[in-house]
Length: 387
Image (cartoon, rainbow, N blue to C red; front, top):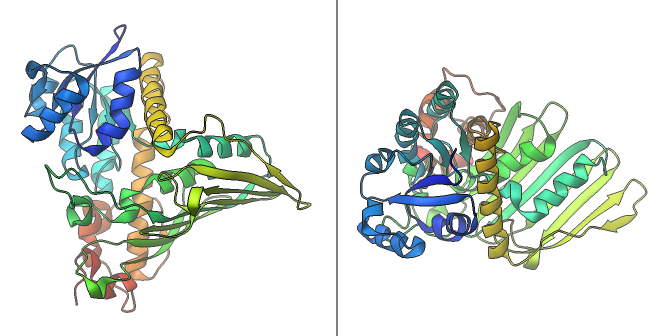
């Protein structure tokens, strides 16, 4: 690795502006040397954001991968386009930092995990919620044993803001089947946070997945998901929806509990945390400060910057990043297991059976399952389950 990590950016959507741009323009040991995007308008925007020359802009990402000095690439295109770019990057001997989710299908996700391992290259996912100050503090308190063993971790994301995609590409792409899922797939952050906070790998998932106002429109994917996840020694509950609703976290342990809330009771990642406290087994409350707490966008920018710093250190020290490809593959299986549970009305075991259509095809395989007649997902006509 050179003194500075030479980086290529593939895809220049909105997430680049508020996330990757702060990292790529402030970290002293990272240098962006080229940008690729299929849309001329987005290339022009990226040129201005990063003060690039025309010679550093590419319409075809493969031309960017051919640049010898580039050591790593960040892939920020919609998920259905990511897998071949990841594989091409590994073939070109580049490390990869990819937006989440890792893929739309578990079969492909595990192919990417294997490819990175076989190439002896790093692949990290943009699981930046690991670095948000509220979750870092919660994790520290759990690691200290403040509430004993974690029993149930409840993560409330019922007020997810439905930000559109880049208008120059397709503003509503997250609401199409091509997105691989709806709000739960888009906000897979809650899923990997559950695994991280509990400290284990999921064994079972059951869920309801719906679009409650489907009669007023014709949705393809969900805007509400309610999950219960079983781990070896604990459980997690995730409440997720686009719109307005409860946000925060409640974690119960063998010796107490931890509770966290956001400004105006909004959801994580969309506002500033304002309350974090623990209650011990004798019902005594202790308030806890959240380090480096600033306004929401400052916290988000810092989370990306710290994620990038971890990625660079992982390459330099030849260790796994905090969010390796394998973690992305596990999170994807939990999401698709939840969809399968909602469609079949059954608990789904994890990891997914590799012979199932959902493992092989993602949400396109849901219609091939034994669909529960009373499924809310079916009633809403989601994932191609039309009457």
